[in-house]
Length: 345
Ligand code: MRU
Image (cartoon, rainbow, N blue to C red; front, side, top):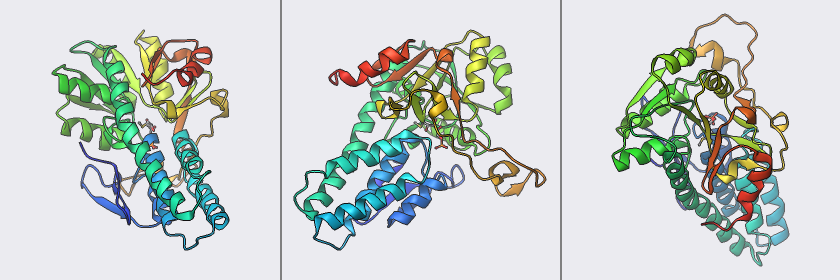
C-alpha cells in the first residue's frame, strides 16, 4: 500500500493526490509554507492524513528555529500551530494532531528536548493511526457478508490515513482474508475523490470496484441491491451528527428510503465532544472553479457558485459509528463519551 505521508529528517514526502490517477508523484515539503499549501490545495487530504501532515509540518518548522531560549521557542511554536490550523476548518483531526504536539512540549526543559519530542509525537500519531485503521476495518468487516455490495463516497482510504483507511479498511481487510466485497464508489463531485482516488486505490489493491456518478446513487441502490453504505468522517459532534464529504447527507437519506444500513467509520480523533451538534461544525466553502471547471476545462458559464466541501448527516440517519474501540449503535450522546473512558483493548 502507498504511504500518503512520510517523515524524513529534513523534509516530509507526500503522495500528490491532485496528480492521481494520471501520475503517481511524490512531493517534498521542505518548510511550513509547503505543508500549509499542500493541505489547502488537497495534495494531501482526508482527515487523518491532514492531521499527520500538519503534525510533521509543525515538527519540521520547530526543527528550524534558531534559538536556545524556551520562551521564544514556545512563542514561535504557537504562531506556527495557528498558521497550520488555518489551512482547513472542518476536519477536527487537524486541530487534534496540532494540540497533541503542543501538549508534548509543555514540560520540555530545553529547546533540543522540545524539538525531539515534537518529532517523536508526530511519528507516534502516524504509527497509531495504522493500528487504529486496522481495528476499524475489523469491526466494519464484522457487519458485512461475503458478496455484499457496499456504497461509499469520497476517499476514506489508505491514502487518507496511515494505512487501510477508515471506510475503505473493510475492503482492504476483506481482500487480505479472501472475502469478496463489491465496492460502489460515488465519483464525488466537485473534486472527484471517488473517481480519481477511491476507484484507483481499490482497483490497485485488487478490490472489485464499480464507479458511478453521484446522481446514480438511488438507481444503483435499487438495481444493484446495495447492502450497506459506509463513509468516513471529518468531524463527529457529541450527538453523533457527522460532517463528511459533500454528498454524504444525500446518501444517508437515500439509504433510509431503501432501508439500507448507513455506517460512519472514523477514529476517536475525529470525534469532537466539544462540538455539541452538527450545526456547530464549521463547513469549508471552496473556490468556485472547483465547480465551474473539471480538470482545468470550463464546463459552466461564469455564474454564482455555492461550493460547500462538506455536509452534515444528522445522527438519526446513522445506523452505527464504527471506531477503533468498537461500534456504537444509536444514543450517541450517551455512548460516544464512554469510548474515551475505557482503556485501549
Ligand atoms: O476534502 P477531503 O478530500 O479532505 O475530504 C475527505 C473526506 O471527506 C473523508 O471522507 C474524511 O476526511 C475521512 S478520510 C479517512
